[in-house]
Length: 461
Image (tube, rainbow, N blue to C red; front, side, top):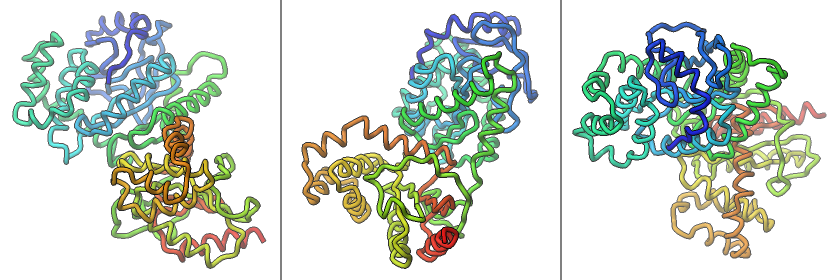
């Protein structure tokens, strides 16, 4: 991840001067606004845009003041990233964040939280290297280098500290201090502190993000991030209402948006693995009036009494199971039900996005549902080379148009928009169904679907 820092040197001039007086190590971005070990919910800091000093009030829910950050303290949108330097999806997401920061340089602030996962053997060492470099004002340089050299982690499993110390020397850091900080108890405390916050926020994997408090999970496309950033910027503008940025803007927005994330009990698909106690019949009410409906992704009459929004991933095995159960349920109720498919390709399913593109390309030739059914039926073959063209040919599609539509960025943006709507509702996994505002999560049995559908129909009588 190579962040475009040229635009922010001018904005940080006053911040450098003030924090230099305080004796904090800075590069072109502040590595830690508070490293004195105190918590505190507020701090007097110079706004990085060079304006008057502002008393920034931190959030008690998702605090950021003691973490590496880049961007103005008064930024309207704060993206908090929980990341692991050995996670390939984190590397991909880091590049996307760089693009977001470049696109919205005046309005975004990026905050990094350490979350090295236990099954990545060099992840903690990477975290330690970044923290040690940050102590000398070079967190983001080490951050970028670690992600760029992620493929070499295993080769340096036995000399990781020396390897990263070599790069610290290239950054003109005090190498002896770097090595002391690499092993320091305070470095361990920082990692443990961030991990404790992740647990508190119910973050179980990487990458995970909170955009002004709203959760976004996985290495989502740029369009998903941009959509949420623009929405959160508009929300901030509404609070500011043309005046000065209030010091508690971030804290206020986090409290508002984090509360909008429903505490869904994880059904079998939420972690993409079987659960010991699946949450059968779990229901949460949602307002679906703002959800988009593409007519090519609808089954059933448009004037149906009951609408089911199905947020699914074609490579998720629980989505395939739920699809069968839902069809069985629909066979037991009347025809006053329509199903609206919404794309939610999860980042850890490599074929989920290509499969979604195939479904959309088939939709453009009037065969969305036929492709939908084939993708679930042939789910085990989605890794096979040429599978999508094979399925398209079996449906009698124009293959030249199909290939062009699969590559069309407009349709990819439509998929990203569906995903953004799912994230805005607080959905974190698939399958998730919303039946006249009632959420049913996971691969529930057909009886659960029947019960909720009949309750919805009874309310329409």
